[in-house]
Amino acid sequence: MFQHILVPVDGSGTSEVAVGKAIELARAFGSTVTVIYVIDPYPFTGVGTDFAYGQAEYLSAATAEANASVHAAKEAFANAGVAVDTSVIEAHTAWRGIVEAGASLEADLIVMGSHGRSGLEKLVLGSVAQAVLSHTKLPVLVVRS
Image 1 (cartoon, rainbow, N blue to C red):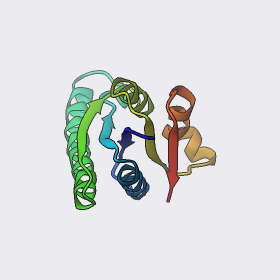
Image 2 (image 1 turned 90 degrees about the vertical axis):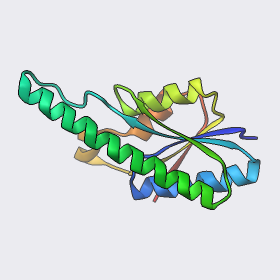
Image 3 (image 1 turned 30 degrees about the vertical axis):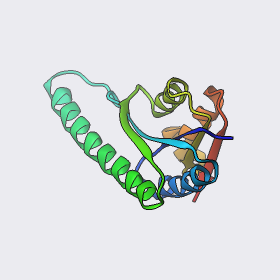
């Protein structure tokens, strides 16, 4: 039923729960799995040398976090006996990177976590899961911890 599952991760506990669900589905259907982490290379705007220095630090830290997150997910899949490909990608927004990866990889399903933010936190930080649901044509399994 699901031949290729896309699993976006962000290093959170909710993301780990989504990895667990994706493992169950991949084992049940013999699916190929791709784990991605999306880095927004321009999360803030600014001018001058202070911005450039902050940008370089941000990208370094974001890349380290991304690599750690995909490595942890890869280990979880390996421990369950499920083969997985991993990738760290850049996109202007996380949801856009997820939607574009799903289309380019020809995934059948996206399995992702949702932090369940509400109120002001949702207004300020947004909902990646909601944006993915609104912009993709693929089925999406949203997992909450």
